[in-house]
Every structure is written in structure tokens, then in C-alpha cells.
Image 1: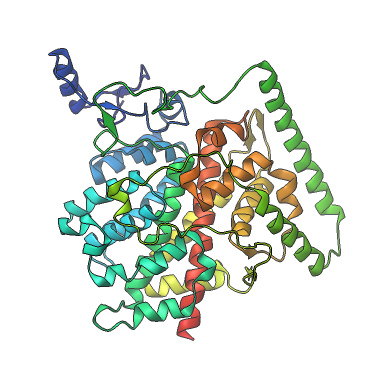
Image 2: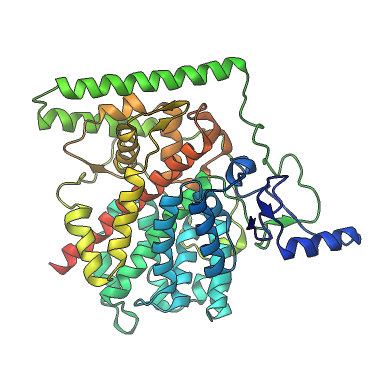
Length: 480
């Protein structure tokens, strides 16, 4: 049995879970006619049926991780519940985040949480902002800082420029940005402090992508995570079927899409064996074609813009600054980042490990785990080599951030990633606050939710690595 916390327990008849003491108290109050708040979203995610996350007979590895999370933080939050669909990844993620926030490092604990707030606010992520405001106070942070960025010390405010660039257009980072932070007199950063800050910023920009990409619900104890009346049909879209549009016709189409994908993977594998002697010029042309095509991959224009809540807006300066396509017609194109010139394996990893011991190793492990994670399944098929599909997703994320792999054939991206999936990937990676449930339900319609969560884990890590590569390259240029 697993005892859930008060935000996610009693999941509508799912066996193997016991309501916590807090929920039992709430039930007593309800029985006595006392008005109690209700959670806006049912379960950890508004995209994924709660029964698929809180399944009967939770695997032992997943159960152990939930217990560890509860012992460490006093709760099992909704992000952990959804990531728990992939226990091997969750283990790696948890170790990395624990080191960043709770173990010895150059930055004091309260500043780490404040940097997390600054990063999450760039993507309007109320979930992460609210969570880390609470953590900030718990570790002794000054409540006055939470009134807004202008009330924080100048040293933290100096991070604002690099925060917004890393969040939206990391290719603009230069060694001058690094120099400005390291040489600002009494408010200067040490190189070790800056490395930890950059890892925290990229970690929380990417985690915001996961929150929006998986439709993570606010917990009951978070501001705006509860109400005292039932939500109106317009204000809460928690029904898994409300946008699915599932019927026999669409189900048949979805099954056909799976078979088409399987056939394309088979053909591409055969072509790899047959095609030899492709020139670097041809490979570069294929990348440029994919990069230009990505300009046309945008979310629907009718997506409503949501006003930022005050508790998020106060941490954002220059809110109009957002993602802008790496390549735009009529504008000077920034030089493409050739992955072979500055690799994570040969350059980024060693630089981080030298300046912030252990975190480089944990980040490397996390990247490797998610990139190689496979159950050899695709929808209803088993015994499938999914490496080609995982590589296409990873490289497409890097493509929209201007990173090119000389040895990768970008035709695979167009063959394997349907348009609805491309729209979802680019939205979640570049402007996650625009993600909708419709986008989530309309790609890979016959795939399991756990497979869609796997896509989100790939997006999280590919995005984080891309931003880190740009930041670390700028630091290397500054140091040399």
C-alpha cells in the first residue's frame, strides 16, 4: 500500500492507495457540513487519466521512489507522480534535483529557490513559482523578496538578462554576458556560483516545459489550486475525453498512423544500409530544409493569451521577450551551432564537473538515461527498436534551437514526426505556456500515455542540454 499526500490521494477507487491523515480530517469536516476547498484538477495531470498514473499494484521501483520523495520533502508532488511512469528516469532526475537544491554547493539554499522562481516565471509557470516560493520561505528566505524581482538583491537581479535569453533565445548568449556577471564589483558572481545558477535556470526552464507538456495540475495547497465551488465547464478541462474526439473512424485512422510510422522506420533503416557517400553539402542542405520548414510549425493562432497572475508577473522583467525562430526570412541568420565543434561529451561535461563537482556526472547520467530509455514498444507493437524515433525527437528539439549534427540525416525528422507531433514538440520546447490539451491528444492518438510522457522527458532533457551548450560555450570563450 502507498499512502498518498492530501493533494493526490483517494483517486476514485484506485486500489493500493490509502487516504492520508489530512484527507481523513477533511472528510470529517465535510461530514459536519464545513465548507472545504476542492482541487481544481482531478489527479496529478489534466491530460492523463488518474487511473493510468495511480495504477493498482504500483511497481516496486516506483513505490520505493515515492517513499524516498515523501521522506525527503514530506510530499509526493504531481511532477513526481507523472514522472513515476518511468522509474529509471525518475531516479536520475531526483538525484540531480536533490543535489542542486539540497546538497552543498556555491549558492546558499534560499538563493537557489529564488533562481528557480525567476526561471519558472519566464514561462508563466504558476506551479513551479508557487512551489518554490514556499520552499524559499522554509529555508529562511526574506519574505520581502517575494514581492517581486525589484525587491531582491542586485546580484540576483543581474541574472535577469541571461535568464530571459536562456529561456527563449539561448543562441544569443555571448562571452560578454558572462563577463558582465563575473565583473560587477560588489555584486559580482564567482565562476562556481554562476555555473550553479546556469544549471538551475536551464533545469527550471525545461521543467516548466514538462509541467505544461503533461498538463500537471496545481496541488491543493497551492494558490489557485483549489476553489470553494465546483469549477465551471469553461474554467476546468479535466475530462480526458473532452477533446479526444474518439470514435470508430478516428480510432481506425490512429491505428493506421501507427502502421505507417512502423513502415517508415523500416524503410529508413533499409535506406541507411544502402545509402553511401552522401556529401557534407547534401547533409547540410537537408538540415537547412528542416530548419526552414520548422518556421511553418506553429500553434494555432486562436490560442487564447492568458494574463499573468500577479505572483508570477512580479518576477518577470521584459515580459514581451519570447522565443523567436532561429531562422526568419529577411533577417540575418545567427550562425548554426555545429554540435561537433562544442559537444556535451568533450566540452560541456568536463567544464561543469571541474567547477561544480558531481553535478556534471549526474547531468550526463540523466541525459543518457532518457536518450537510451526504451521498452521496445510502439503503441500495440512490441520488440521494436525505437532508437531512430528517439533520435529524431531529440535532434528536432536541437534543430529549432539552431544546433546541427553533421552526421545526422534530417530527412528522418520529416519521415518520422507527423505535423501534429512537430507542433507539440516545438510548442512544449519553445513556448510551453501555449500548450493545450488538444495538442496533446492529437499526436500519436493510439499511443499509451506513458509513451507521451516519455516524449516529454526527451523534450525536457534535449531542451536543457541545448541551452547548457550555448551557455557553457560562452563561458569557455570567456575563459580563453
